[in-house]
Length: 214
Image (cartoon, rainbow, N blue to C red; front, side, top):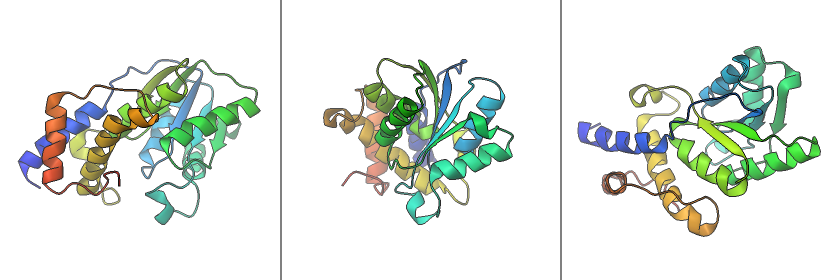
């Protein structure tokens, strides 16, 4: 892949990070995805005693419905159990199919459990930090939220299951959603710097348009 393309992609990668510092919170909410390293990050934070409750949210989404035969939340919970998280600390929401449903269905789950946490650590893929934050604050504005992700550099993130081309396509699509989802009521508004938007447009011109909204 051209160096110029990688430079443009890195601009989006950096913008998608919100760079929150992780602090002790009431619970950890791990949003499902096709990247099992997200589950590992959530479990690590629990084991480091950042929160006493670990919630996994996710059914089968756009990417995982053709990859796995079990929900993202159930798959992630198994990873956490293998890492030493006790079953008693884990809650599972396994019906949601997008980020908005992750939040809304988790709200419903907590209400059923009689729980009302005030502060959350939300864990998602690195390039979905900002979108996860914007979605959470839209649906749960009165709660404190810190967003984090697997601590992996852009150059090291892609692998055989998630190739670099796929990563860039998803980052482009997610930036488009950050731009247009607020007017649909899905997210809070976030300003996109000119250099980020220019990088986005150049990546589309280069053919990275596989994850754009229809």
